[in-house]
Picture 1 (cartoon, helix red, strand yellow):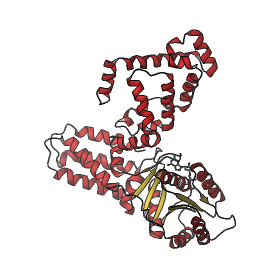
Picture 2 (cartoon, rainbow, N blue to C red):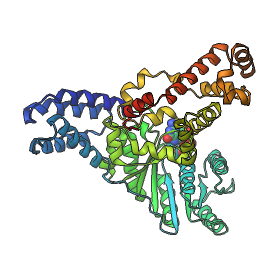
Picture 3 (cartoon, protein in one colour):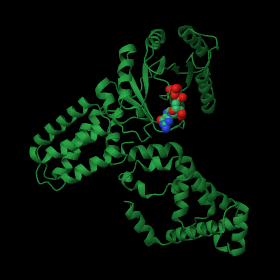
Amino acid sequence: MFSNLADSLDKTFRNLRGVGKISESNITDALRDIRLALLEADVEFGVAKEFVAHVKEKAVGADVLKSIKPGEQIVKIFHDELAELLGGDQVPLDLTPPARILLCGLNGAGKTTTAGKLANRLKKEGRKPLLVAIDLYRPAAIDQLAVLGKQIGVPVYTPEASETDVVKVAREALAWAETQPHNVIIFDTAGRQEVDERLVEELKRLHQFVQPQETLLVADSATGQQAVSVAKHFDEAVGISGIILTKLDGDARGGAALSMRAVTGKPIKFAGEGEKLDQLFEFHPNRMADRILGMGDIVGMVEQVASKIDEKDAMKSMQRLAEGKFDFYDFLDQMKMLQKLGDMKGLLGLLPGFNKIKKQIPDAAFDPKRMKRTEAIVLSMTPDERRRPEIIKQSRRDRIAKGSGTKLVEVNQLLKQFGEMRKMMRSPNKMNKMMKQMGGGM
Ligand code: GDP
């Protein structure tokens, strides 16, 4: 997401870097390029125009700070305007009791998946969510929610197949909820191919009855401007309290994310970035602006890593490394941690500048199948071999390759890499250099 926009902006700002002082004449070209880049990213025309006017006003009027170069200053102005456009501060969910969340949106936007993701998130935060399926037209959607609920261990209310009245279902669901320990209820409602009268009427009745604290529109960011107009329609019909943008992991141009807030006035509260149930993230305008400008989102990355990896495990592993005791048992532990992280490419995308080098990294480097093969090799070693890899000579290598169903070259390669890694760990100078390169120091 946003990589094309990030690329064009990068070029524009590079041109400005040599400029001694910002003036109306030397930023005119840059502003035109910015506007084009925004339009190409499918940002709504009026939004792009107004945005550029704001940047211009601030840039031309700005006192040139002595400490930063003009080129950098305009990047900062642009960044702050972008964060403002995306909504300023992050807006948290209103979960005052009786916390009820109504999810609405068109078919295929990712509503049901998002209901599961949201329940999963709330549960991990220590809350007790319930899920209620009120899509009376698509039995498959009800089954889908039931399956998701089972996966994450959240109870799901599923209506009778013959039921046709949404208010009746909601009433029964609330009665059922009383029999379950809970402190938040998520309602997954019916969608349509497009916003039509019947859908709106039904949603209005449901909304009136449920009286939710949060009415969140689930919108597919890949549909660009259409997502924005859908949000406007839903807002006029029932009054939404916020937006969840899905499929931000895709290649779409990102315009929906950028125009959504300005056009609807409603905050984007969460972003879906993948099909998995843990790929729903709080939407932080500031961090998103960083990402668009290729500055990365380190905080987001640390949060994602922390939610999946136990700090104690990570520290133990670091300790063993530092003591030079690293063996194939530690290696296996580390592989398990990496596998838990899941989507490595997505995660690395949060590093500053990663988008620029992404194309040079082969996809194989993130291939879970390859990790599985490496794991198989280690699992085919005897305990003694794992502890003392130096004893693994030719005949043992043949046996390991056979046992793991891999090729001898793969075994050789792994042992070579492991040997090099160990050598580096044992050499304080090299470690020190590496840490310095990483910005640390020892
Ligand atoms: P609904 O009709 O609105 O309930 O949509 P679904 O929840 O059935 O989702 C439609 C499709 O979009 C499914 O294949 C989901 O796996 C996929 N999907 C949902 N959210 C995301 C997301 O954030 N990223 C990606 N890549 N796919 C998503």
